[in-house]
Image 1 (cartoon, one colour):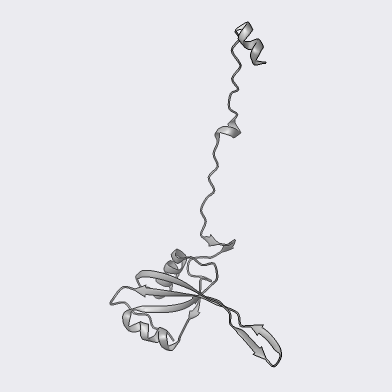
Image 2 (cartoon, one colour):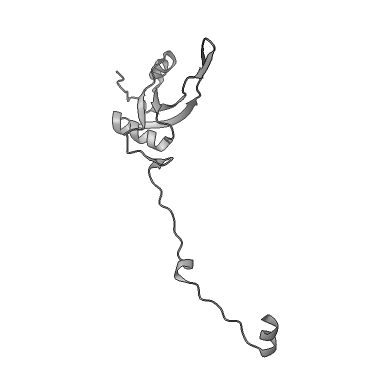
Length: 129
């Protein structure tokens, strides 16, 4: 007890830190999102998203792709650069929410999706079938 230590002039014993207490474990960063491993370019890009608005963006060097949900900008950048052999300048991600649809009395929802607007370096181009 602290009172008796002062009376008897004993210094309290200091505990030496154990090996487990001194080690700090840092989790390694992996190249996956939400528990799904996404290899470079495989499974990240689903398909080109071809609409009237996206086809007008081709003149400015912006291309729109449907991407897997949970993909991040770095994975999308690497996937486009690897698949099409272009230099990516910027990536913007947009989540398109599902729309409500009715057939008679029954109401349902059309599933949403994630799309990426990718801007490439001027002079590069992507041939989309």
